[in-house]
Image (cartoon, rainbow, N blue to C red; front, side, top):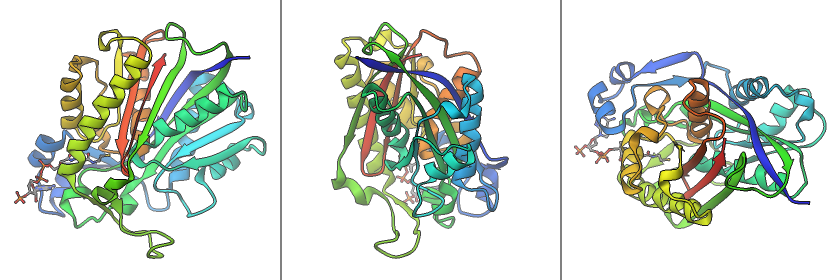
Amino acid sequence: MAYHSVIVGCGSYLPARVVENQELAAKVDTSDEWIIERTGIRRRHIAAEGETTCDLAYAAASAALQNAGVKPEAIDLIVLATATPDHTFPATATQVQARLGLTHGAAFDVHAVCSGFIYALAVADNFLKAGQAKTALVIGAETFSRILDWKDRSTCVLFGDGAGAVLLERQDGAPDVRSQGVISTHLHSDGRYKDHLFVDGGPSSTQSTGYLRMAGKEVFKHAVTNLAGVVNEALSANNISAAEVDWVVPHQANQRILDATARKLQLDPGRVISTVANHANTSAASVPLALATAVGDGRIQRGQLLILEAMGGGFTWGAGLVRW
Ligand code: COA
């Protein structure tokens, strides 16, 4: 029996506290103008003291379940993408599972930093296609504020906290570009570029959490090339042109990356969902946050063709073609 998966609901959560650019300009040598001009970012949400990735993930998951009209008991797979788990172990996914009151099925984390949601979606989609699960909760959740060096102006202005989630249901029949569902996913990684974007700590190396370090210009160049490449790969794998895509739902790292990628793909920038101004780069949470925003405000409609894409530390990058 062939199967495919359908996204039946989505949801998101942002912590209550909003930090505007001006507030950062009072702490490090930066300005609202510089941040907006170089990144498009205006504000970010920061988790409250004691509020963890699991809390954010649970809130987004609950919103997605409500949006889908599905009871938690239906879930038999939870895949959670994060680079900022509550603990080294157990996986944050298992804590979300417990919070949802579930003791059946499987829950685990995937770690692909800013590409994490695309990786998690691909994993869950493949589990459903293989017949190994029926209803999957896919979450991207991060508290990057905890791994930022708040004295480093070149990184601390770029990131925020948040979470987004989708609910996938298995349906009969192979994926088809004309029918609702996840049509294909495409994943890549290249470990040679670790030093361009990494955290300088970890349990096995320094026994500390560490801080995010980044060579911004290098990341920028690779991001545009890799993202345009993987979007083209997804289009040609399905024999469709960029003109047939209704919405691009990209990882929200920087407005200039969104614009440059759209230019390279000759895509109308009006069809690229952008939410980076309001929540900065939330890593694995950014694609489902953008998706939930555009579904919520009515831009994304059932039946439309979406391309989801992201790039992150590793490097990792990927794309998913979805008929909403
Ligand atoms: N405020 C003011 N000035 C800043 C600053 C800030 N927050 N951060 C850096 N600068 C300064 C630099 O020190 C540098 O000063 P100098 O010329 O005196 O040395 C100058 O601005 C230019 O820095 P540069 O790094 O060349 O700027 P840029 O145009 O490349 O923009 C980024 C910097 C980080 C915004 C940009 O490289 C970027 O967005 N890269 C991708 C990052 C990303 O999205 N990563 C996550 C991917 S998942």
